[in-house]
Length: 418
Image (tube, rainbow, N blue to C red; front, top):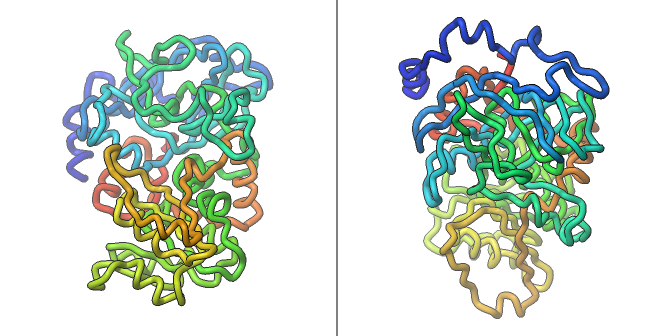
């Protein structure tokens, strides 16, 4: 056992007795509510189920019995089938650099099935397969109506909000005590309630244990390349940071037909694995006594055609911009820096016709665009399996945190039914 898992066992509460799990094991297929086209047998009722609750910053999650209230207006309650751990969950669980909000149910990369819908929801029905997304698409604001933006005014990510939009209340509780939501999704629970605008409807044939990773990091990196950088066939691309998001950006460059994809990372152990994603050259900035942008410019006869920065490190951002070729080079910033960070470069770099762009969730509109990304996988254009390096049952969710803390693997799939 890992230390985290041992802690979880030692801290087990009265809820965690075998009696509780046999009585309230909502994750078992035999206890799943029967679904019809219009209504489930649990529609309108409070559902007791298991959830992994973070009680304190940096402390192991505890599997608790929670009560999940019915969805209200424009909300949907889903049964989570598979979820994954993203670095954003880890960051806010550690509560570094932001206001702590506990107790809380984390999780935002997932796939599930609609159990019931609230008043006003017309585009989803019981039984639909869906991807929850940390940002949404209301369809009515200026951003949603713009072809150039996916930053919905109503449903844009808000990491400090722990309640629902409609009434400012939580749908989770333990013995009457509210438990905070996380980025409107909270998928570390067998059931969760989400605004309908934050759910993308899936092809029911798509394997949910694979496409669940498309609800955050993989789509972010993929879209940063395909939707924002837009490399042409035969072009050269540099990717800064070879974690899951960076490798998804490389996957986008591979799909676009880039002839050369240069991976930049401080961890040489990542280089061999990165070859699976189309990386052709590797650069570790620590191996050189000059700025890495100069190294890349020398490698590519003046600079790459496109670069994608996926670390959030300011120095990497500057390097990503300054390593693109003058005249046509485009640099895309994906990583999120600290709020007080300042980006500095010489104005001549812009005047020499280099372009700097930023992106949010790969410029994908969740409801409109994610179904087509799933289709890319179903049509074998996008390879997802290589992103999935580990699997654990829900009862061992803390092992996923251990793996990420040790920097092992890319995505760990957590099965809610094992």
